[in-house]
Amino acid sequence: MGLLERISAWDPKEIAARPEIKELWRKGLFWCLAHRRSFKYPMGIKLPQDAFFEYEPRDLVPISDEEIAILCWAAAGTNGIIRNDLSYIQGATIHPWFEGRVYPSACNVWYVHLIFCTDDGIYRYVPHVPAQPVEIQGEEDLWKIFQAFKDGVRQISNQPIRIPEQSPAAWKLTAPFIFKPGTVMFIPVADLTTEYINLIFYLSDAERYIFIDDIKGEGRPAGIEKWVKSGYLNGVKAPLTMIETVVPPVIYSSAAFMIQNLQLAQAAMGLGGYPLGGYQSIIVMGATPVMRGLGFRFNLDKRGVPYPVGIDGHVHGHLPPYMDLDAAVEDLWNVRYQPGYGRYSPDVPDGAKVKYPGFDPEPREVYRPFKDVDKYLQTAIKQSPEAVEIAKAAVHYIWDTYGRLPALADSFIAPNIVQISHVDVKFYEKYSKEGSVWDEHYRHFEVWHRG
Image (cartoon, rainbow, N blue to C red; front, side, top):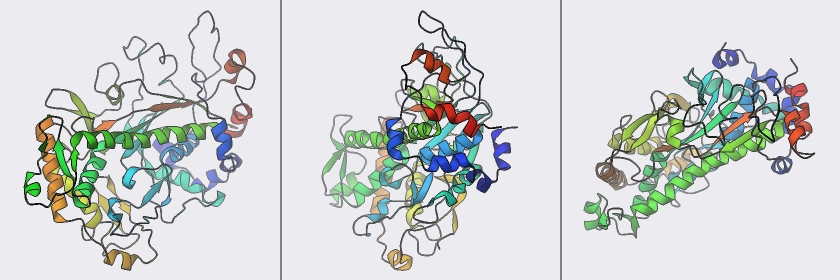
């Protein structure tokens, strides 16, 4: 029986009432910070034999579905509605979403996707829609974590990622212990295309920036000459390299926050884990023959270099082949203002279900943070029509010139990954100083795996 079949039979409230779940809720942040450690060697895995390591592993115990649910929420779950504590004059509409997560995100743009790999295959976790400022007020709300997992897991593939020992991807540093049976590999995948377009929107509308292509060394306007000549764009000159160096690290940081959250959760739960980079992102995504990876589709840019654009039916970038460039720009306008559709549209009541094809193919409910929703929405100042046309012109220029979006960075990237596993305490007792494992590791199986 696969993961989706197992969790379809869940009673989230029964799971939340279990003693181990309530005990976990009471674990303090500062304790978790003090015990955040990497544990590289998974339980049940044959380890290298050398002059130092000479160890026969204990039996394998896979990470349970309930543990995966908690880890997914800790990494990328919904924690409430944002305050959106700006007026329209101050630029409130830079936020296209009101959903809050357990990690921060630039402009509240939710396009870092949490993908995880188990023995059953590859999955994507879709966080649930919050209905109040704080979703989990106390132990009585813990069931929402498991309901969110039950409702929000999508299977991408029924084949887990494995690295053959003879593969060029099987680096001596990591090959003994990653992508192994019984473990869960969490892979945050950052989509740069959405925030890239969102930033062009804001800078051209609120700041009237003049985008300059300094990559080619010519200093020419990046497709927006018309608005420079008319005087509409009269702000500072913004080189493309500035945008290209600002957007990627901001989006990558959300993936890094997920990794940190996972390690804090692993400490509280008495699990082990190992965050790592080093593997080229396109290898993990599946662009090379060294490993099958996540199954991304790739485009070629003007130089013939491959870059990822999405996973068919699951994760789609705001770029071809999933959206033409005009539609990609319009989608970010529509999600704000389109009548009967947009988050800032007065005719969309709270609780209404709306389809946002650029975010998720399934309808998502709309809940807003304002006390006086009608008054707030009636004062809406839409981004100007020129902002939409300028964004389209700039995006077309970048695409036509470089054959990709963004011009320099990959559209999607998996900057860091983390594997979560059970700790083989006997191994660490044998090779590490006293105190390298703690009571949570010793008690884990009697608490979490009583059956």
